[in-house]
Image (cartoon, rainbow, N blue to C red; front, side, top):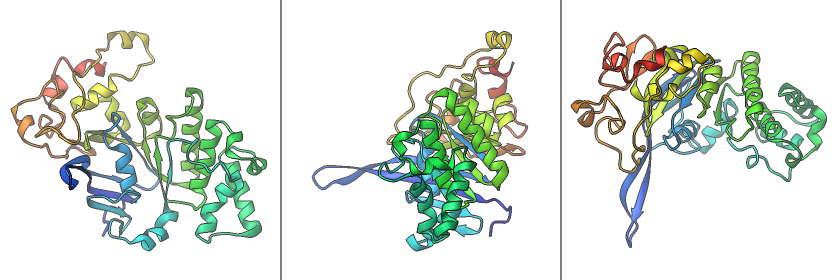
Length: 344
């Protein structure tokens, strides 16, 4: 039973991929793409999911929607646990959860008109047909800022931003409660990115849909998200509201990420100290023992190398996976002179 009323609840989600080798293709090791991620998303809320390339953001998003079957863990859509449903059971729930893919150039069928593309989900699920279907398609195109007359055109006749709007219209056609936005702005020009993000915010206000917003651009994530989760090497490092994430981050990795976001104040920007991590992220096929971040952490101690930190709530609504954060949210992390420059 979902006692707290969350729309989406992810519990200890894991997704491993086998690496095979030898004559008999035996499993030599496992790539731990997602390794024990947990969070919740409320109705009408946007949860931003950020981290370096290869940290498991997209795999997490796809595993939540069961586009890739998790190795273990649970995913709840309200009171319905998704990981044990068969294909027919999942099909019935597809109208409640949809996805906007990263590449608007590869995600639309070039042989179909826009009208056909937007109408297809409603036809498949038997929602509308005939004149009511055509009216709904025109309404959706207008909702995302496109002229309904464009419905007779083909995808190659549109710009990247317009194609992304078509994909959003297609995703919203079945009136979902939950929408995964898998880096929806990364393939767009900078001038268009803000337009798409503002459109998503406007649609959320009108329709009450919840978002999981996967992205690299921290400034955009801060703009659209209510809360933000930071991933590193398949694990969730920190989760809190957007203001706390940027004003008072507790995890050294989060601090390194937020220190890279420019401040629109030249005086503060000159004073601020950048946190540059040394080395490269380890391979998910051979992750470090203990805390997966300890090999790059500037304040790691002995316990960090041997014991996996629990993802725990150190202050109300602020969860962090770090041994050095205490119950008051203060520790060597927040007082270390190397790391406190980004709080000015």
